[in-house]
Image (cartoon, rainbow, N blue to C red; front, side, top):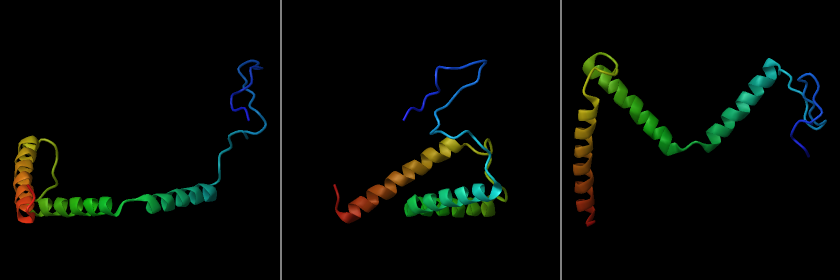
Length: 104
């Protein structure tokens, strides 16, 4: 089945094969149905681990707001320095856990 427009073009009009219907705006009910189908497919494919990470991020955001009284915004803190220090702490926690499990 050809999907390219025909070469027979006059005054900028493009002729498509009969198998491809012309674009038509769809009604609101159809739009909602398509959206619900796409959302259901997304729900079917999403990762429970990813959902837990998002939940953890939201919990950390709330904790930060409670501690500092405002949401974190760019420029408030030295994020790069703090992230590096957190990564160092992470390394220590990971090494301690590996040692506790007897891993080399």
